[in-house]
Length: 270
Image (cartoon, rainbow, N blue to C red; front, side):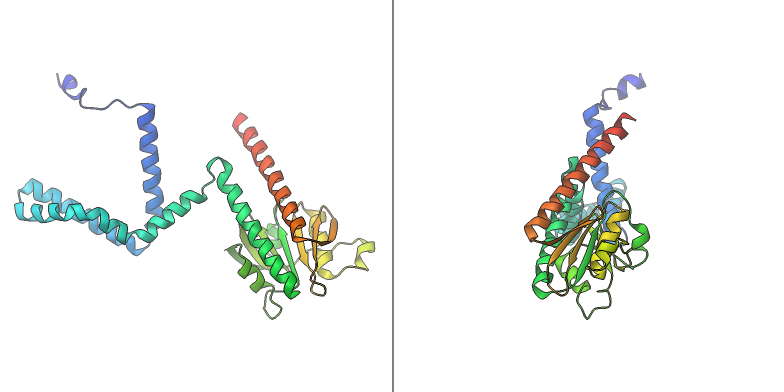
């Protein structure tokens, strides 16, 4: 009899319901991760206390308290938007940066490469010497640890500030991992090719050296001429245009995307 009474009340758990629950749980988790440790967490605690007070007022028949809290309820949505506007922006930004179907990763790489191009353009005009190494499949952790850790988003202003001739970090290389600057003032191995040692400077030899040992792509700006050079696979292409740099970066991005697709397919089969 009891079972027959409760069965019509309980909703049937379907695949759609499970997806719905997981989606809501994911949003709640992301929001909690954002507000944790912030002042907004105290606001949420206050809202929970008011909700508990309302339930207590209903249970204990405290009509005045229940009426006050009930009259405040319609304004709660507007108040939440005003109080949590910064947290909502962070939540939307975090969702936008997620790698949905690979689109998030592509957009991040494109934005990162655009910032690098803008920095190269400015440093070329100012004849600011620079060496930017972009990590690919082979990790560069050893070389990152030789420099000054930054772990900052790639931006034109930051790159130009790092390589400013009067700055403390302008010597050495900047290593880019994904969409972040992992470290600056990094020491790189110099190429031991005798034909290149005589006609190239230290930055260019370091760019070739790192690409001889790894699959990284190195971008060099000459302090004397302002010309850009691209080093890859132990070879260097001198005096290239910004369009050529953009083309090489796009090629590297496409190759990395293909590698990630193949790796994911192998992982799925396993």
